[in-house]
Amino acid sequence: MLMLTVLVGALALVLGGCSSPEKALRARAVDFYNFLRGTRPDDSYLNYLSPARKAEIAKNLGAEQLKLLASTIGGRGRAQRDPINAGRVKVQMAGNFGISWVEARQDEPLVQSSPVKWVLDGGTWYLFQGSEAEVKQFGEYPRELLQRQKRAGAAPKAPSQPIEEPAPEEPPPAPRG
Image 1 (cartoon, rainbow, N blue to C red):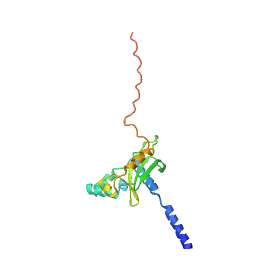
Image 2: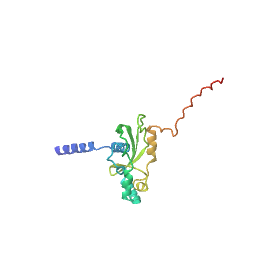
Image 3: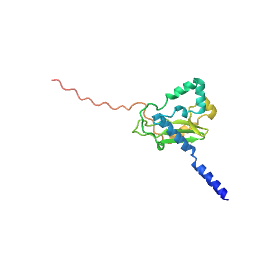
Image 4: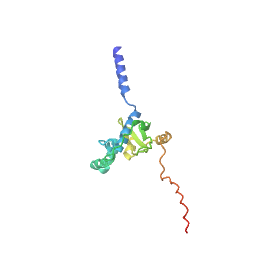
């Protein structure tokens, strides 16, 4: 009986220590957004591409070109900014697919992010770019997930054109005399 109690307790500790897929997606998205902001200089864009997508790009471009491409993407060389905290990153999931976005804040350069699509593969969340190889391996990205994100209250997008201020009234011409 004691052995069964110890076994059940150990199992509870192991399962309790596991992160939920939603928490894992949020943590991965936070890392990605911070990589883009330049607060993760040792990270690489390749770390966020699914194995299917990396293989497809390497096949089309070659492995060396893939590494070169990845070295030009992301936050390297950008001015350091404060990292984004997990509380500002919103996520939603449907099966092995997820979506994330950063909650808007007016007091910083990254006011709002566009939704980022994710796919879970082998216990790790990767960017889902909808490539032929990804669709073949994982299936089509669920449209309802994008719709749910819109209903979840993501900040409205900024207007595509600046708001025009009314021109100041010109003073009447001075009388000639």
